[in-house]
Structures are given as C-alpha cells and as structure tokens.
Length: 208
Image (tube, rainbow, N blue to C red; front, side):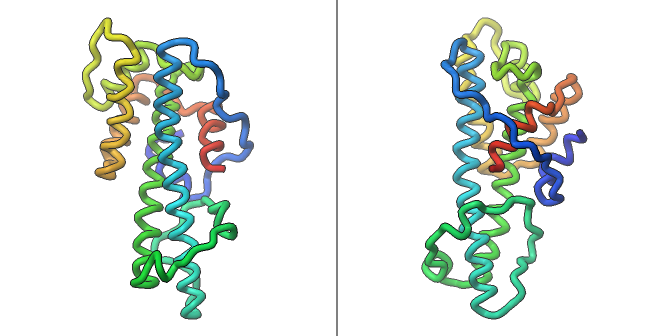
C-alpha cells in the first residue's frame, strides 16, 4: 500500500473491513513489549478523544444546518467514519458553539484533521513493529527514531525511549506536521517495513 495514501484512506472510504482481534491485553513480558504497548496505548487514548471531538463537531454542524433548514453538508469533505455516539449525545450545541454554524464547521474541519493525523501516526507505530509480534526490538526502536532524526544510544535500556516516542507523537500532533510524519513513514518503507494485514486489523479496532 502506498504510504502516502494513509491520511486519505478515511476521506476516500477505503478502510478494509473485517474488524479482527484487538491488540491483546496481555501481561507485558519484556521491555520491548512495554514500549510497544505503552506507545500504542498513548496514541490510542488520544484517538479516543479526537473521535469524541469529531463526533461533537459533526453532530452540531448537522444540528445548525437543520436549524436553518440548509443542506447538511460542510465545506470540508467528511472522512469515512461514522461517529458511533452521534445519536447518543445530549448536546447543547448553542452553548458549545455560540457563534453558530460557522464555528461548528471550523471545529469539524479541525477535529477531522487531528483525528486523521492521530490515526496515521498510529499506523506508523504499527508499521514500526516489523514482525507484528506487538513488541519493539532494539533494531526497530533504532529505525523508528532514525526515521524522525532522533538519537538512539546503544546499550540504553529500551524503556528509556518511551518518553522520546510519546513526545514525538505529541509534538507532531500539536504542530499538525503531516509532512514530517509522512517523511518518517517513507524512511521506514525504504527500509522494508510494510503496513500488514495484522496492522490493518489493529487499526480497524481504533476505527470502531
């Protein structure tokens, strides 16, 4: 799969079906497993928040369109993700977006972008586990850090890289650095890493 398509799978509706099993909740047995689990769970927690923000903005955009009897379509093309809690939310859209439709549409566009970035970064974290064993080896951590021009010190305990990896995600998301993220993904692809079927199953769980 062309890595440059990753951020756009959702807008084009090209996400595979099949759900699959979630990443298994197992006892963490090694430093490499600790790093992988903590890293992906850190990203996954943010994805959960991004999905909720997107659902709120989406629901309130529809609300304001219906309120003013306009066609319920924002200027930004929707990603292929249906907020599962749209009908379950008891939203006070007028309080959340006192400026009305324009403010809700702006929030929709921003939340869409951040959700897409978080999901794409999650893909990158999965790709970095080259043998799909839910554990980062020293070599895999080296390649991940090198892809983003971060230092790797031989002999340092693998757990010591946890802050570097989570900090990388936080900074890329804060500054919405899609270009930097995709460049790092390209470096991994050039080294032979691929987005596997196991990675897709794990990603599908985050989309549900």
